[in-house]
Amino acid sequence: MTGWVLRRIGQMALVLLGVVTLAFLMAYAVPGDPARLIAGPNADAATVASIRHQLGLDAPLWSQYTAFLGRLARGDLGTSYALHGAPVAEQLAQALPTSALIAVGGIVWQLVLGVPAGIVAAYRPKSAADRLATLGALIGLSAPPFWVGLLLLYYLAYRFSIFPLNGLGDPLWWYLALPTFTLGLAGAAWYARMTRAQMLEVLRSPYIQMARAKGLRERTILTRHALRNALTPLITMIGMDFGYFLGGVLIIESVFGLPGVGKLTYDAIDQLDVPIVTGAVLVAAFFVVVMNFLVDLTYAVVDPRVRNRR
Image 1: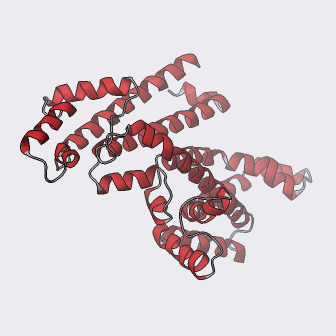
Image 2 (image 1 turned 90 degrees about the horizontal axis):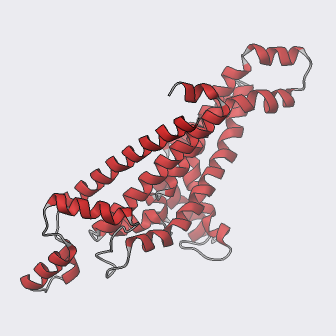
Image 3 (image 1 turned 30 degrees about the vertical axis):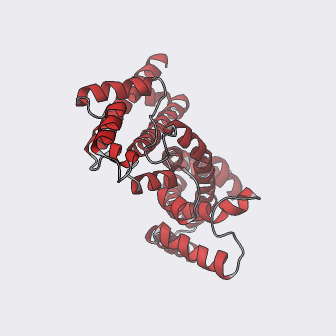
């Protein structure tokens, strides 16, 4: 087990190094002059050249790359160009709790809406409930999140004033109700389809037929036998969704005006603030890789055959 964990950590390190390298190269290739952005449009050439030298932007590419890796090793993601030299790590740390709350809320909605719908659809295949669940999943997958969010804002926040229009306030859950529901709706459709497919396969298995032959109640068969085995693939979806959401949900945070990592990244792109964009990409990649590792670790603990295949 220890050897398997060490190998996975080494693979994580290689993946993160590749992401760091790609992020640096993309930041280097971005058009525009960060020194000019900091100095302002009216600054003279000497001032721009001085700022470029202070930032190390006039150094060779390899020198900038090694300096970039050295800063990352110290936990330094650089300073923002547009926010007057504010540390990028500090800006991301302030935005991350909001993204974490949205991520947790979105996954809760995905589970609450998707899993029961998939169970009902699988238990009564080709019934009205199955067709209704399938239709709901199709609508959920087809509706763009920004469109759903704008509709909810218009009717439930603007027209009827049930929910707040944007931002955060007290009580916090009330302000996050619409954003998390919007985020979870499309995911719930995927969860419903996945749960239905897995439940159908499990319910047709011999041990379920044996449980019914023993006279066990249907509720016991569904919850203790079928659902427990059918939900195993959902662990991967939950872990990957959580890692992705922690990296910032740009559309949701922008539509609802929430100060998360996605909104911070969107504003940075608009202002060509390369350090913040690069830092957000690295944070998102880190969470995705870590959550992928935790999912694999969970599988390895539950099923030793997983680590034996590595």
